[in-house]
Image (cartoon, rainbow, N blue to C red; front, side, top):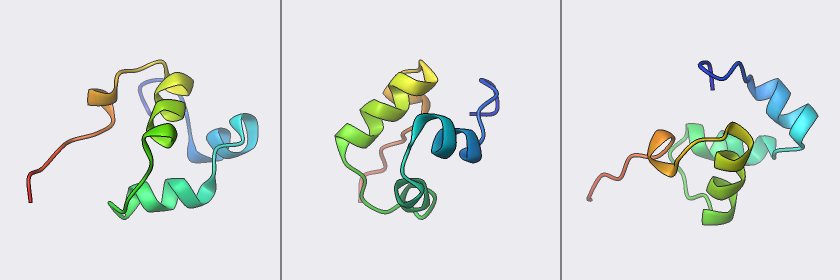
Length: 56
């Protein structure tokens, strides 16, 4: 987000991205693929840019 000049405030207020979803992502909690797709679309990035898979 920093590289693209986005803040959480901007995501919430300009793009109506859910503050709850941002909190869930910060806490490494479950988020839907739809949420990830939306974020990638807004940031114009690939899923690999925002997600890291760690096998449990």
